[in-house]
Length: 176
Image 1: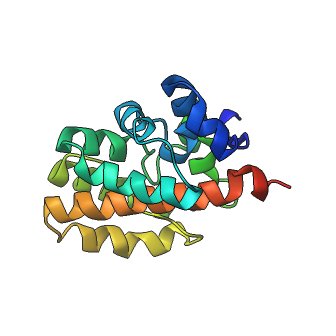
Image 2: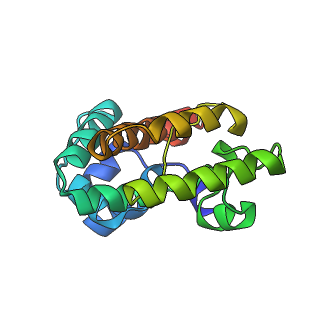
C-alpha cells in the first residue's frame, strides 16, 4: 500500500515543494490537506522530533473547522475492515484488522462512534497503542462525558501520538 512506503530523509522533506511534502508526510496524518499545507509552511525542521512537536502546535493554532478536518481524516474505529484498509493500510493494522474481528466489539464501537459524532460533530480518534478494540470501549464512553473543546484537544494530541508512532516506523533510519 502507498502509506507503508518509507519516509524521505528530513533534508529532503525540508526542500521538496509543498505538494511533495504533503505526499511524503501525508500517511502520518491521514493526508489532511489544510493541516499538511500549514505544516509544510513551518519548514525547515531541525529533527523529526521538531517536526512532530511543531505539528501539534500547528494543529492547536488552526481554526476549529481545520482541526475537525484533521481529526476526521482518520478512519472510524470499528468501521468496515475493507473500507478502513482502502483508506489507510496503517490505520487498518493499528486497529487490529490484521489480527481479529470480534463482531460484538466492532458493533459496540460503531454505536459509540455514532453517539460520539452526534454529540461532538467529529470522529472519535485515539492512539490505539496496541490495545484491543474491547479496551477502547470504556475510553469512548468516558469521552462522551467530556466537553467538546476538551475532546478536540485530546483528539489532536492523539493524532500527533499516532503520527509519532508511524514516523518511528517509517523514517529511513528505522527501515534499515
